[in-house]
Length: 102
Image 1 (cartoon, rainbow, N blue to C red):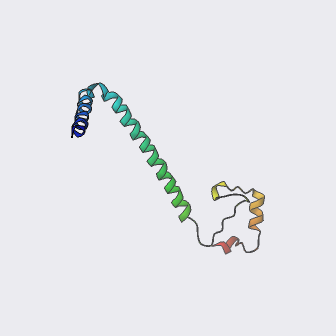
Image 2: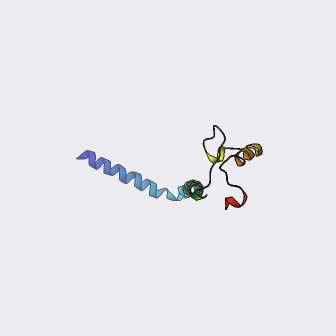
Image 3: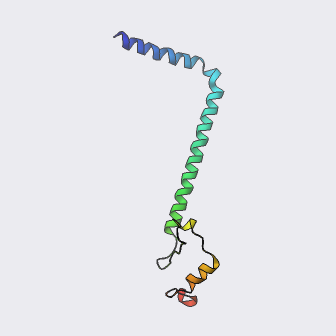
């Protein structure tokens, strides 16, 4: 029983000390709060941009469009084709051209 009373007394003493020194700590506490809020805001903004970019990439295009990527590319954004490569793809059989493309 004395362990529970001692534990409760320690909680009371720590709480009382924190309440008595709140005037000395308000500026450092405010800095910590603003810093944490800033980190959360940046984190939410980055995640929002990533989700928007993902949805944009997933919902654009038409069913008859094809994606041509260079060898070794793991996504659309990391693939680069030269003008010569684009001409080779455009001249390939089965690719619609001009009025056919509409």
